[in-house]
Image (cartoon, rainbow, N blue to C red; front, side, top):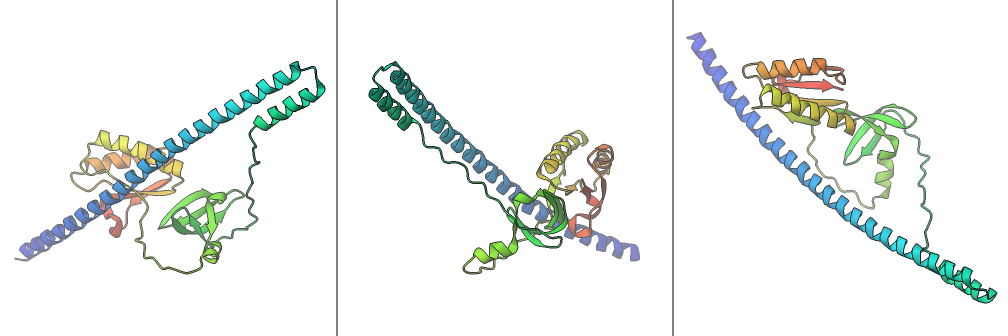
Length: 248
């Protein structure tokens, strides 16, 4: 009788976990879809910028060629006044290029200070001459100081304060559910490379429990990866035994 009651409790708990997992999968799919859409927009923007630069380059080449032609004609002229007029025409054909304004910031960041990094806010944990280690949304990131903005500076520029509730994210994630060991290893290899390029120090990998084959393959891969400092089972609210929290 007691075993029957325990079995019923385990079945109910299993059903709850399955529903929670399904909900997390749906949420993750939405986040991935948003990332893919943003990637498409960035690709389109990159192409637009490339075309604009191409047009500007062609226009500059045309201006320089015309100016050179005017200068050559000026050299051929024996009349000094005509020579000066031709050189003036050549000078007018040259495009007016404004020097780039270099933005210098003398702001001194401090450990423990709240900063803005891209679309997230975080806290500085440690500082180097040109980079900082920050904690944002529960993850640690190593970023350049030029990519940070002080929270005080951002608030001072706003004329009115608007409070927006933003859902917190637990960081960069990879879901390996349903994959074979070989496929999972390929995904993890690309995933960790991208994470390192983006400056992530901590990532989350979901592999589930199942038969244990996928979990074993994940462990062995992480042990052998040269960029993995350490890894452990994720906290219960982040997947528990079915996920690994990886330090890079």
